[in-house]
Length: 107
Length: 117
Image 1 (cartoon, each protein chain N blue to C red):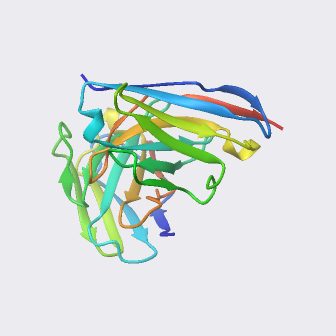
Image 2 (cartoon, rainbow over the protein chains, first blue to last red):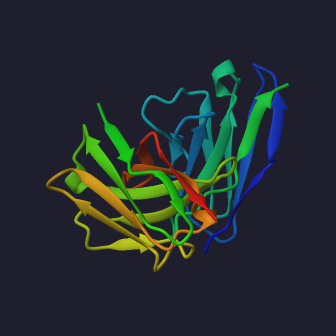
């Protein structure tokens, strides 16, 4: 089973800040990585697929990068609605594992 | 509008069984792979089972293999998860989700399964 590690676990930031979230895979997964955002009481929402492709309707301030084992999700300028938990997920091998998440909260 | 509506969650005793359903609409269900993803209270996400578009291929996480069965009825646009030998650690919100081929692009609102010891 491929293990995804996300760091840091929590980030305290202010609106307007730029942030990069890390996701590392225990083995190479090519570009088969997605990023999701989840707010309290809601289902996750797809942000990025195949490492760097924005999903439909996702603002341009969200971008993804990486391949192999190291990936990043960057938010260029945090909006108030971006404070949430972010998960990465790999689809290279079943089970399609998720990382433990990074919580981005308001400083 | 895409809708995935789960039902069947509730309180069950340890060792018991439960059957979850997911009614799909607004997209081509019969050509879509589908997943069940769960989230224990205050915890992260776990992909527990998946099924291909025609039901021929199914996949399970090790944590549920042999206890859960995923199935689908394309004539009724419905996905199922039969859960047996339930354990306290199976307690979670269970999401029905569509897998587009590259990622999960649609999610239901989730149904809560509570397992009492």
